[in-house]
Amino acid sequence: MKLSYVDILREFITRRMLVAALMGFSSGLPLLLTLTLLQAWLTQAKISLGEIGLFTLIGLPYTIKFLWAPLMDRYKFPWLGRRRGWLFSLQILLALSILLLGQTHPRRDLTAVAIMALLVALFSAMQDTVIDAYRRESLADNEQGLGASLYVWGYRVGMLIASGGGLILAQYTGFKNTYAIMAALMLPGLATTLLASEPSSIHDRPSSLRTAVLGPFVEFFTRHQNAILILLFILLYKFGDTLATTMTTPFYLQLGYSKADIGAVVKLFGFWATVLGGFVGGIGILRIGQYRALLIFGVLQALSTATFAWLTYTGPVLGWLATVIALENFTGGMGTAAFIGFMANLTNREFTATQYALLTSLMGVPRTLFAATTGYMAAQLGWTNFFLLCAFLATPGLVLLRRFRDWL
Image (cartoon, rainbow, N blue to C red; front, side, top):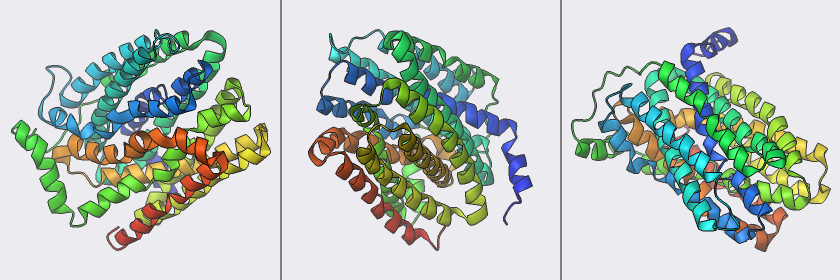
């Protein structure tokens, strides 16, 4: 049964949705501190394009979240409950590692930069594992799509502040002070963790670590006859879009845009398109169904990726940059909301952390393993062909989606 727009609006304005948005902020903030902001820092320090591309390997923890997720399903700290206890402890470690990353120097010791950035990514990925489980367990099945859209909204706010705000701050205060400020911005996440309620679940914790490790995989493959195709689809759905966005910061800088231009136009202006896209994505799932939402939003994502190639012909014109960024953020917000809601509904509440970690780890593979070569790809193909190729790489995922039409 389709909901009216009044019912949908009422669902948005709840305490659970506010927590989803604030936890999304805590997830989104650290991500671009080791991507966009770090890439700008390395570019300014005259690090080669190939080495900058290799730095995307720092995101490897996002692709192996399922390795530690069973520990989070099985064990809990003696404070704040199973989910919030893990979350609070990890947020403390994450804030500290962000602060220490800002104390490194790319020109003096690039290895130290890589190590601290890897710790930021590790604690961030572990935090994401707990937040994903918390959202799945605290929201009903029919709230997952809306919860995902609010999570995406908060996530994008965090990304905006880390990248757009971070680049503007770096322009005037330097990267050391910028990372210190970003560490302090983890405090709202800590407050949310303390004030939120521990999710109630009808399921107990797994009886043993063995059950916590093996149970999620056995249950997932038993419940889904087309489990292999589902996992392949999750790997491919945002493949091209993710590859393209990993190299956009060096792209903008090489075109002639300043760090302030990128912060103000690419991040701040594009943010509002992302907010709108996230809301449209959350509503779209309810109004047109999960299958049509994934298909339509996926096609729009691919088309918006191709528009980056146009900027190579326009040069550093802020109007064209704003147009392309608005399209990319709007379609990306829609696609991500539909995609996250889809993955949440695939999980079983008894093994939430591990199953969701497996799915999101596959989602993160393009951003790390495959994206490590994007610097060399862009150098060999040129920016125009690079972005057109990334747009084309969305095709396999959309073709595979058609296999799920009857099921969805």
